[in-house]
Image (tube, rainbow, N blue to C red; front, top):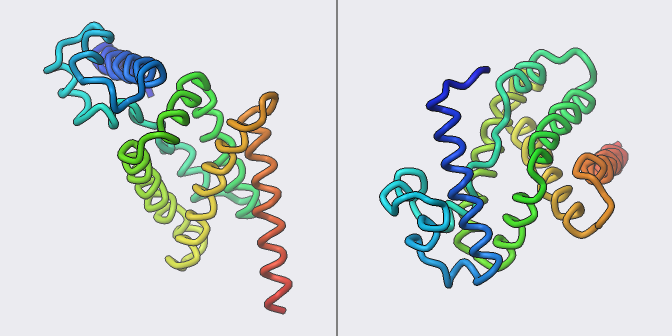
Length: 195
């Protein structure tokens, strides 16, 4: 999908505000930073700040990259095993998250110290779980199973990011591979227990 010049500029401005917020938050603590200071650091007016974000916590989180339509379509229409197709879907999503690792690390730092920012991210994650549940319903024809799969998948992504933050020489994709192996092992244990 090609973005218009106006759309690209809006994304750049949103990103500039997010980066300014994160840099100030890392230096001074998010609770000690004002929206006026963030706007000045980003080179925008306070009014422009509020055109993009409702508060400084939302600016710190930014707009996480969502699931791409073509990836959701591939998951819905996949012909490999559901586990393989879901892992490929998550790999593609993790690749998008890895596009800006420095910002991702700063967001992680803010999340550890600010409950309001964590609540905003939790809202994004809930929306992703719902979106993935709808997508998976096409494959499993059972909303509860689809919801469980979506919950496990988004949780795996979150846990992979946490592992990546802790391990210095580990890529995001490698962290997801480690977490995914644990998810698959847990699924085998649950299956074996029910037989």
